[in-house]
Length: 94
Image (cartoon, rainbow, N blue to C red):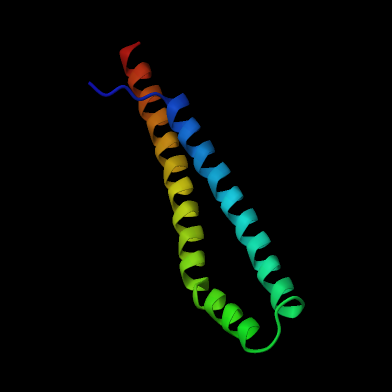
């Protein structure tokens, strides 16, 4: 038997939101670090190679961001639908 309640769905949505914010924050920090390193500590071909490799992964980073945001949105929609379903069932039982 599977037990689902609105609080668990809200908890999942909040966990996804937190994960998304952490991911975005870490990605921003990494982007800043790569930019600082390639403009200061590393020069020339090594800097260009590092920056090019990082930039080549931007589509992947953006895809991960969209996936997390989509999952968060989906969890929110499903939580709302579930809450509505429960309310409708309770109203029908009165």
